[in-house]
Image (cartoon, rainbow, N blue to C red; front, top):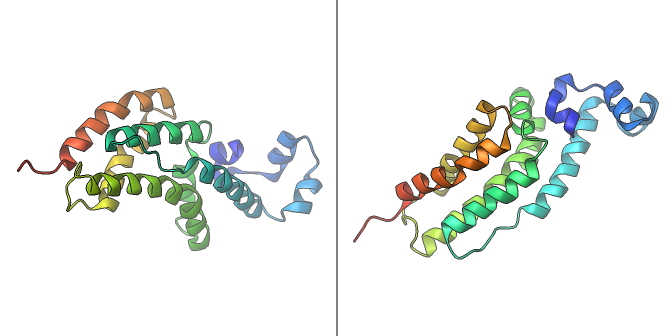
Length: 177
């Protein structure tokens, strides 16, 4: 997975994978006939791992839930933080691979956040007319941007969670009555 994260699908080579695994190329080719098949298998393995951390936190508040969701996600992406942006770009011209990237890397991130936001609307913490999909994008977007700008420094991204979240929640708060 690390090679896929650092080199992407285009830069991935069966030779490097075999070298990292300490086996011959034929061992890799016996199991996966192409580097795309190998990448898809790695993404499927990541999907299984991500499903285990995709539980929706319940702390009793939107802020607490989102802080916890961010912490869980940051632990999950450690070492693979460039995987989503790199593979999203590489899947642009390949619809099937794009669907796989979305299923494995995008949807597991979005679903818990949308659920947290939905609960926040139900509890009256967030505006009743909040567009949950757009709110999710507005919440996640700055972290992805900062991750790319800070060259994968998760500590830098973690430092911005609370201030960014406070701005986000002020904007999404219900109008005073």
